[in-house]
Length: 409
Image 1 (spheres, rainbow, N blue to C red):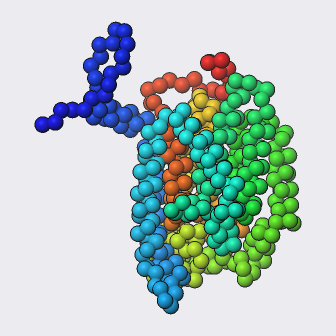
Image 2 (cartoon, rainbow, N blue to C red):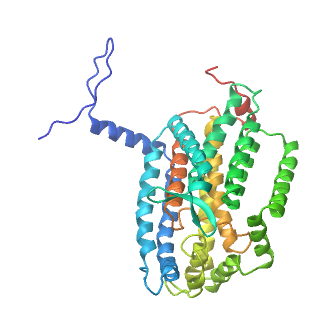
Image 3 (cartoon, rainbow, N blue to C red):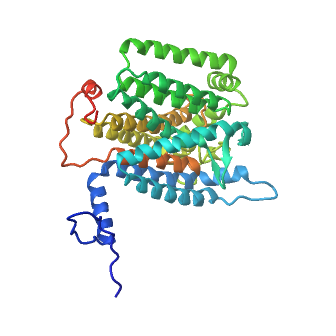
């Protein structure tokens, strides 16, 4: 019989506490985590991941057939098998991150954001080119730095905006605006208009939540419309995608194929592996997996998926009601804006209600770095929204929260 392992007890005057077994320490940490973590949020995430497994199984044969050549045949379920591996890796990463406290989540988010921003500078130089865009770096697997920069950006912006508690005179809005402009410029070099728009959306939500005067909202919206107009005039990628969305075309007609595929199955779908239109759909297992779901499982299933995403977003927002930590409020809002924004942009593209953006459907689409990045985002979100149910909170309005003095100052 082996002796139990013990942790070393802290030394100091008057310290006579016996050492604590490692096994008991882990049990206590797990018990605290289970008490504080949002179990409803975990359930919603699990449901979307389970749907993703079935959806990739349905789309995998179509994508494998398009990649097959006369000399080499790609296995029908190659993407499905890889997806299972990435889902398990992502789930492990997400659960592990959810054990962090808020300070640790903040430091990790800032570190990852800084590293990915640095990598964004070299992507146009050493990046891998796919479909005319350089967005990936080969690190043993295709890593897309912008995917991991999204949660890092939300954490960094929340951290900077929360400086107002210590010094209300700091121009924190200009700091995060400059950061967003830098990132948008780097993304346009790839080119990656879709992610640039998503970063802009995260920035807008967070600066408005941080207390920007309502009089400036019209100016911000006008500046965004103006920037999009300039992109249409001077940025070929934006012009081609918008023209293809409005008038169709041979090079940018994926959204038309997606819309026809999603409606081909009617309300109840054709059944698993019985879809036909998906065989002509590009990126069926990634960008247009929502259309595959519509063809094989029906529009009713698509509607249920939309409700799941809405429930997940609303659950986080409800969780933040009464939050008395400005950083946690801003960070969680930024992270869920990123997650929900990416999901709904993807679904709108599949419904031909938005130009093609090259975005995956979070937790459902096949992906390597994209799956890990989404799970990284949700892991930080779970960590930041952890709450002791027995701890009384001050609450109050958002203005009270912003104007409240920092007790440590």
